Length: 345
View 1 (cartoon, rainbow, N blue to C red):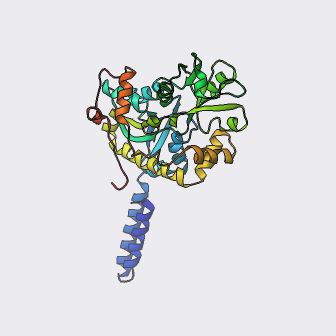
View 2: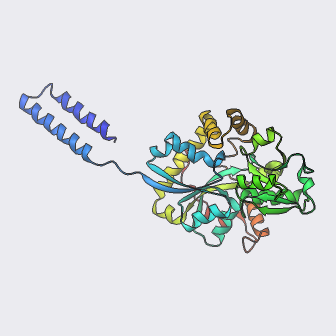
């Protein structure tokens, strides 16, 4: 019970009894009540648990659910202090959680995590993060010859964030489906990728809205492809939230409380317009551009933490990329999933 509430209850009880007790008995009862209050207030409040979390692509909408929830106090409600480390995605996020440098990683590539699990890495998927990737797209500098992905033929260079990332895997799928022989290049985060495209070091780059939305509107760059142009990508859970196995085994309750706050943050972000204010603020965007990003690129259904699909395709991709040693079925990797909490539990 809350210490203040307990104190009030004790005092109220003493006051109630004073109506029918003798003067001496009332004095003793009041003294006892005050002693209990002093003892209760002297007990130090339980210190919040620190949870180390890796978040890729700072400022992106869905990767920021935990950030928004932290600002709203949802993690404090669960007695959690978030210690956030930002990464460039892909292997950098995966390595952080596998090594134990962080306890939890959000929005990391499903293929990379399942591949790591198959090789014995101490990691478990605790929820889905994104099915499809409506916010992920590729662009070229405006005014040039590149207007679509088909114009990338002939070995032109096109960026993705890092090996094993959703931008890497989605790009490979798009190039294969459209029979384009462009050269994928790991270009890092969105700002350095933009610099490389605008300076001519890359023919095309990658981004996740809201990054680049204003540049498209202002005619500086042209969108040439979107990840969800592929129906396979659109129906595949490409990013997941994961926990280090050692943390999960030793502090399962902490991970349960994290998921309670995370789900509340995700739901709040889509239901409360203040989240769009946060998106605009974090990306130095006008509110209209941030609102356009959320309403034009993103859906609550796609970020449903409990929606999983296309896992067999993930395994097939992992085999093709030589990330796993043999062909596998979904049942063979069911141990990687540990959905620690669902609403209603």
